[in-house]
Amino acid sequence: MFQTVEKRSLSEAVYAQLRDRILSDELSAGEELPSERVLTELLGVNRGAVREALKRLQQARLIAVRHGGATQVLDWRREAGLEMLPSLLVKASGQINTEVARGILSLRQSLAPTIAAAAAQQAHSALANRLDELLERMQAAAADDARLQVLALDYWREVIDGSGNIAYRLAFNSLEATYAAIRPLLTAVMCAEFRDIAGLKALAQAIRQGDSQAAQDHAAAHVALGGQAIEHLLQQLGSRQKGQA
Amino acid sequence: MFQTVEKRSLSEAVYAQLRDRILSDELSAGEELPSERVLTELLGVNRGAVREALKRLQQARLIAVRHGGATQVLDWRREAGLEMLPSLLVKASGQINTEVARGILSLRQSLAPTIAAAAAQQAHSALANRLDELLERMQAAAADDARLQVLALDYWREVIDGSGNIAYRLAFNSLEATYAAIRPLLTAVMCAEFRDIAGLKALAQAIRQGDSQAAQDHAAAHVALGGQAIEHLLQQLGSRQKGQA
DNA sequence: TCACAACAACTGGTATGATCAGTTGATCAG
DNA sequence: CTGATCAACTGATCATACCAGTTGTTGTGA
Image 1 (cartoon, rainbow over the protein chains, first blue to last red):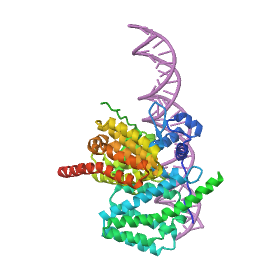
Image 2 (image 1 turned 45 degrees about the horizontal axis):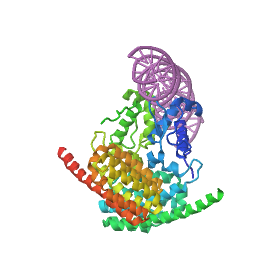
Image 3 (image 1 turned 120 degrees about the vertical axis):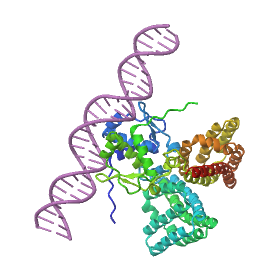
């Protein structure tokens, strides 16, 4: 019903503005940013706020700052990390970039089976027990798609933890942050996947038995459900946006 | 022969110190950071430097800052993205975290075949031509492992671009930044993979023919070379570090 | 003419101190 | 016990210095 109101600091606003200009190629790679003092005047904020925003851009590998020299825009396609996905997926205008969405889907469908297989190989009953518990909670909430979505994410988090691979975990974190940017949309579209509790149950069973091949197959089949649903939506979106243009 | 000397700004030093403390669990999730004014005194730098460092930590999803409230340390295992891999791989002490290294290897060996398959499906002759050109350059530099390494990375960058998937690209960028942190080591250890120009040639051929299955297989076989070499090294490292402890 | 030192005019980096603004918990009236 | 008030935190913003590195120009000497 209620949602926390968004409050944005100045430096965050500056960061978001510059980030979006860079990601939309309005500021292209190699281009030099105005000096901090000029930005201060252009944006009407304090130099500290500008510098804080620049530090964030630097952390995101979107710009390169050199003491005494000009600040350059980097090639985000070559330098940026997965944490930029949310900003790439939903453009500054609010529209969804279907190409990016397809890419994310593909990454997801590639990683999920691998992770499931690794989890089956590493962890067995302890993990499977936790998964079974989650599955019970999912069945109890079978009517509430939003709740199912949360539990499904918890489920995958457990599987990833079970794989013992921190790299998978970090990649998943970035993906999850991306989902969060369009959560309401996903809740509606991907319910076919959330409701496939049977698929997750089969996966848990495969993990319990340490059968990594079965785990891989069940994971692939499960995430394909959401993948198909989204692909269907993207095709609608694509033709609609094309129709508008 | 020569390498650029590293110059570190105050805010960067503060960032690095706090980041390492968080990633090493010295500062654990949920814990509250001292206030900015206190940090200023503890670290002996001005408040601006502290704030800039905190902004970077915030961008990296390592801390949560609330206006008026205390700044909390987040659970990096749950929040951080792939861009933290370099700092996780090589600990503050300089030692390599073998568990993280294995995770990275696994991620790499999972993604490479998928990406190769996608590239074969999407792009054909144009990409294959660029790859062939790179392969010629690799053959010309066959004696220079460091040069081969650079060209191999260029090769994969082309393949990823050919796949048209920006998510793969961003993940690759993070991985590449991780490699950069231990480049000299990799040059020595992974030369078996860099020298497998024949494998990359077979992959290029599969891409030209649009044979995604063959591309997937060749990619898997190729990256397995480096994977085995590193796994071998990690086992040595593991037993040596265990011997020291 | 050609190095090259010196300098001016940028650039970002650091420092200080004040003030605004949100949070928290204690206190006190109702 | 509820809810307003207030003091004491917290981070956020601001203005103004000055330090430090880079860059291009300018003038000097060989």
